[in-house]
Length: 456
Ligand SMILES: [Zn+2]
Image 1 (cartoon, rainbow, N blue to C red):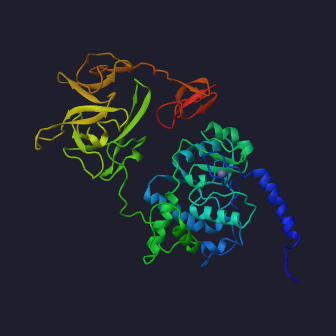
Image 2 (spheres, helix red, strand yellow; image 1 turned 120 degrees about the vertical axis):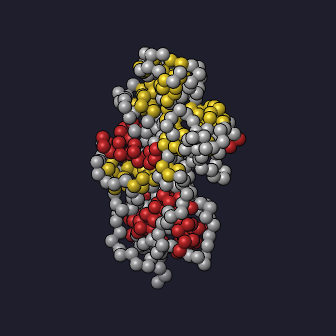
Image 3 (cartoon, rainbow, N blue to C red; image 1 turned 135 degrees about the vertical axis):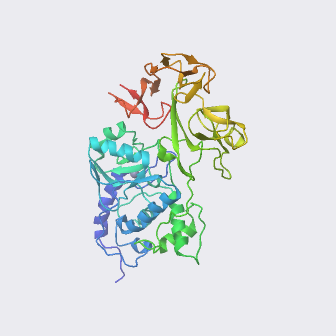
């Protein structure tokens, strides 16, 4: 007898049809249609020599490639330190299984943890590597596992590091929204995105390509971060339990440089060592700015393609490495909140030739030490602070409002900055220090991730 599909195929198809109706497969404009939901249970198989291709059938859980995926995430951290953080279960956060890779973009992770601390959140999918996406895509092509849509590997918004699928999406929705997560896919209510975070799609592909080349010296592929036929062929052959030679960060030069924008000192891991993130509020426009600086005694490091640097004398015990105002920095336009200011070189005992340079200094120089008439003081913005003693002009960089206060200074109450979200007026608040009685939103206020528009 010629074989034909057994009747029970129809039975197993029924829930698939149901799932299609529930989760839908329509993409929103600008986003590929994708799989959103449960990446499966923990697999109970012992990984030996199976390749990724071996799991195109026989399982419906991406946990089969969890060890390889973890290597890719760790290699991404070698390429771009700090780009992902590792999450741990607890404090309200749970993972459906080891198929959910516990890595996430740093700011997205913080807002997820904040939300979970208020209301429990169960992740059924989070950050996916190109290998997990490869399997989901193949299962879709083979009409397996009830998957009705899956973006091409390299293109999934789950590879961005800022997307999650939530098991208890109904009860968690309001809390996630209040913490900066949006739920943009009306037909996929399980799906949330943290859109103020950077989209890192392609970095996972780049990391896989590096791992492949490190382990296959006689079969090198392009390390371009693009998913093409060459990369697809190697993903099929890659060992599910991970490569023999794992992630390697050694020799990876830091990407941070003098003058780079930053929020904390962690964002100023300079090639010369740990730098400092100098941050300030530009009270004229209400923006929080930060730039990487370093201490120096006369000279500062240089690097091809980066801003030139100068050891500036800012009336401090040590010099300060800052970026030079020239074409590389577009005369300081590339360093938000700074302006071109001519300063002396810092030097000890006059060993170096005395010289001046025009560098990028904070336009609002509040907080910098200054001196006038033999007395030392602190630069204040007289618009927003009152000096109880004498204040001298011309001793601080920046506008004429910035003066050197030689006595004690008192801050006047912070100015209030207004914002508007969907036509509703609100106030910009620092969520690290101020709570909002209503909803907080991104994008409507200048400054760091913590400065949000509070509407009630
Ligand atoms: Zn999703």
